[in-house]
Each structure stands twice: as C-alpha cells, then as structure tokens.
Image 1 (cartoon, rainbow, N blue to C red):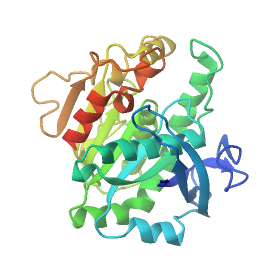
Image 2 (cartoon, one colour; image 1 turned 180 degrees about the vertical axis):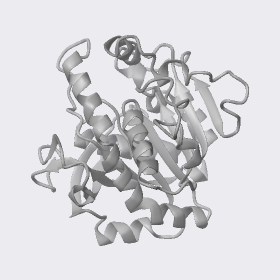
Image 3 (cartoon, rainbow, N blue to C red; image 1 turned 120 degrees about the vertical axis):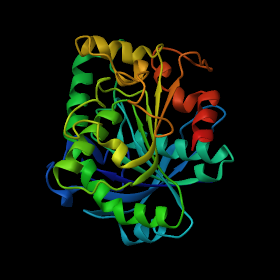
Image 4 (spheres, rainbow, N blue to C red; image 1 turned 60 degrees about the vertical axis):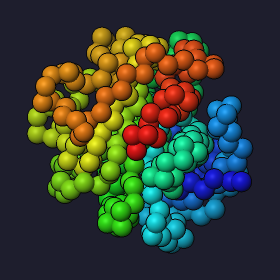
Amino acid sequence: MATTIYFATNRVVSNPLDPLAGYAAAMTPPTNPGYLTYGTAFVDGIDIATNAQGVVTQIAETAQGHFPPGATGDLSQPGRNLLIFIHGFDNTFSDALTRGAFNRDWLAASGVPAADTTVIAFSWPSLGQVAAMPVPQADYLRDQNMARQSGPALMFFFQALEPILRAARASHQSVILLAHSMGNLALQAAVESWFLHGGATDVLFDRVILAAGDTTFDCFDQPNLARLSGLNQLAERIGIYYSHDDDVLRLSEVVNLGAQRLGQDGPRGRTTPGLFPPPAFTMVDCSAYRYPGFGFLTSHQYYRQSPDVRAIISGWI
C-alpha cells in the first residue's frame, strides 16, 4: 500500500511530475515564498524490517507558493497528527520523500497513537551524491552552504503550515518536527529567520527531534535568539539524539576545522544544571546501539535504522 507524503521544496523545478530528474540541486530565489513548490506524492515499497525506503511512484499535484487545494484539505482534516521532516546531507529530492515516508511508517508501526502521523517533508537542494569515500569535502561544503541559505525558504514553509499546525494542536493532535543531520543547520537558519521577521513566540510543535545534528554544539547558547537558541519558544519539548560513534560527524568535525557537532555529544553545557531543564529537553546518547549494516554512512542513520533507537523516539513522543 502506498504511503502518501506531502512536500515543499526550494529546489528549482523543471518538471514537477518527475521526482528523479525534475527537481534540481539548485535553489530558487531565497527571499520570495512564491517560488516554493508544494505538492503530494506517493511512495511504494517501504519495508521497515529491511530498512528499504521504497520509491516515489507518483506526484499527484503541485502548486507554487502554497499547498494545492487537495493537500490543504487533507492536512486540515480533524484527527490528524502531523510529522514535519527535514533531511540532511546527500539527499536527492526523491530521497527526501522516501525517507520522510519511511519515517512515517516506522513511527506508525510503534503502536503509539501520537506517532501515527501524516508526514510533510521539506527538501532543500542537497546534491544527493557521495562520489567517493570519504565524503568529498567540496560536495559537503556545497551542501552545507545550501542548507544554511535555505533558512528563509524553510521559514516561509513554516508560515504556510502555521494555521494547520495551530489547528491540529488546538484539537489535541500531535505535531512533531524531525530534523536529521544537516537538516539541523537548515532548521537553525529558519528559526533565526522566524524571529528576525517577527514570528510569534508561540508553540508550534509538541515535540522536536534533533537527530545526529550536523551543526555546531554551541547552537543553543547564542544571544538574541540566534541559531537554535529560540527553538524552545516554538516547541513544548526538544529531544536531542547524539552518538560518539557517528563516523560522518567525525569527518564533519574535521571538515569544519575542529568545530564539535551537536550530534556528537549533545549541546555545549548539556550537563550543567538549569541550562537544559527536563522535561523541556531530553538528551539521548545513542553511541552503544548497533544494528544490521552499521558502518561509515549508516552510523549516522541510527535514528531510523536502529530498532532500539526507534523505540526510544516513539516512546518519547
């Protein structure tokens, strides 16, 4: 059975019905929300047991600058929990949709009612390629720049979703935001933009999951709502998942001239009393978890490939 996924993207689109070749790794003008493409897609072939992401079999409808009417109607239906997903480095547009759909399915399979969600993915223009091992520095830095510059577009996406998110929370449905890897950097830029543009300091998300965050570990202790320091004003609870054995983030630290990453040991000062008070913040060390296929790239994917970590996340929701 196909999984429905809704999406928004700031990629340049040449053919909105072609998920493989129609969505480029180039960025639309960053300050105009009218250039964002919104749509609905279907993913088939997901297998949680084997971690198969499936394939995008159809893009049903798209629109510029806003969700298509059918998507808006579906997302606004009462009783729907919502999952917003922001992908990381090395993801094509198609990857963003299939991983978003996979996340929806493993969360739903947990049996936790609040984890049974409708998923909306935001795809920023990652190259979606790893040409050699280790990860080529030029490709990585190019994606990093794209993620950072996607902050305003991601903010526009949040603005478009805001009425839907508020309606869902008002009807006691769960609203979850999941950012993986370099998606944390895009989220950081969006949160900064949100407050710079006068966004309300009201809660939009019940839970925010920051998994294997590829941004600096000092992102929460910045002044004037910079970086992620304002995220707790938009979320009821924030879960930060990190691993000392994340080989991708070890390499990222080297590429970033020794700057420790959020996903390596959590945020700076995480053990200091009062800085990250529970239950507003939850810190989860995932270093000890192993799973089939664990290796260089997959060590960065524990949040969705490790059954144990999936159980921790769904239980926390």
